[in-house]
Length: 89
Image (tube, rainbow, N blue to C red; front, side, top):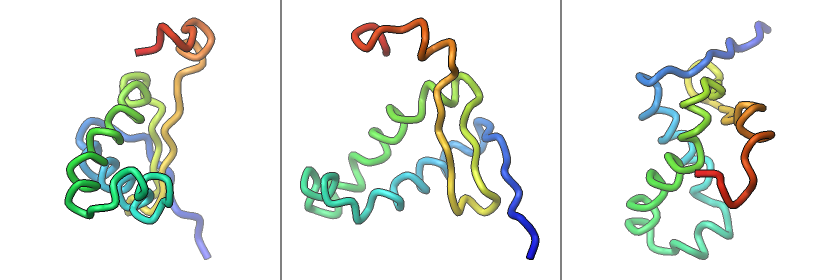
């Protein structure tokens, strides 16, 4: 069995990455408590995913498994080390 390819995301991958995050949290109890209505969830999860992954896209630290079967959104170490929690935007 071959290993799946892990790729660095580019701006063209953003819609698929956001959809992957939306699917990943679709059954999360805390998120669904906040947004119990499916339409409400779908209208908010994309904005939340962009907030969650936005800086990672800026720093080139979003990676995904081919076919968008999984992903990782990391922050650049410099961003983590130089920003205090209150100054992160």
